[in-house]
Amino acid sequence: MPRAPSKAPSPFRASGHDHETCIDRALDCAAQLCQRRGARLTELRREVLALVWRGHEPVGAYAILDALRGTHPTAAPPTVYRALDFLIEQGLIHRLASLNAYMGCARPEAPHVSQFLICAGCGTAAELDEPAIAAAVLRRADQLGFAVEQQTVEVRGFCPRCREPAEKSP
Amino acid sequence: MPRAPSKAPSPFRASGHDHETCIDRALDCAAQLCQRRGARLTELRREVLALVWRGHEPVGAYAILDALRGTHPTAAPPTVYRALDFLIEQGLIHRLASLNAYMGCARPEAPHVSQFLICAGCGTAAELDEPAIAAAVLRRADQLGFAVEQQTVEVRGFCPRCREPAEKSP
DNA sequence: GATGATATGTTATACTATAACGTCGTCAAG
DNA sequence: CTTGACGACGTTATAGTATAACATATCATC
Image 1: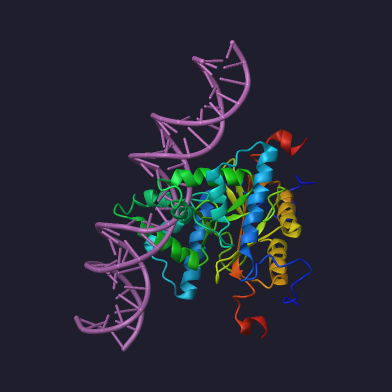
Image 2: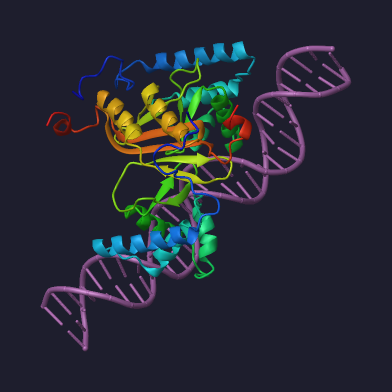
């Protein structure tokens, strides 16, 4: 029964959800985490984080740069990339290799192995934290004597809203 | 028992293996497949395929371009990218998104969902065809109503030969 | 050999990311 | 207070990856 939304809440946000809350939550959480760690969440980094959280679609570095120029007219690529590097190190955002784009981390409190469902229709991406997937990868790698450092799992497809109705209930 | 090489043969090639055989097999197989499909494996495409198969390390497009200039002095980026596109369409090579690089497909005869183990030590990559991994992804996506079109699973780590001995048998 | 489709040549450019070096501010040791 | 070390940021230049657009050549078929 693929259509049953499952026990967990959908990682896809409803189109009309209150996104300001998403942003605020992300910024607050980031501030707390950085404080706790002694990491400096500067104004610049905070702005870049907010821009990454503009929506639930992964954003390219140069799109962030364009937006950032509203407040920092002289910003250049290194400005953005350095902030992105910091945010990735702190686990506050993820980089999607298949898109060369960045998105906010759904659960920055704890390190985790995540997977991404990327909708080819609307461009939104959902972050999963599915132990079964990570474990399947680890188990096979282990069998082959391969020591896993990092998993990149990015799945392209169509989210529930972007699937054709015919496709949903044939 | 992580070190037991498992029932299946290792997807990692021994350092001293006869790589000419790998190349020949790949080229022969490609020729057969293209013939069967009415696809034109031109000399240029064949050369690019051979260059991708130079080793078991994924190769960047511009590295291929440099090598290609031995026989095609005027080759330009589109020359290479068009050949790569063709080879990917035919399932003869894969693109590794996390590396922006390309490698020969281990089993071009049949379409399949593959995963890649990429060694950060020696640069070699091994292609897996592990149904358990693909299935774990599909199952979760299905639960969420997400229609999977393509899976990108790329695992960075260290192959058996590049792991420190201490790491292998603690 | 004329025709249409496919493949390749050629030039230019877009997009993504980093190197290298300089300036400024903060903070702790002297 | 000053000095020095460090981290963040500014600035310029460049590396690396990929595609657009249009011209020319090659091939299969009629």
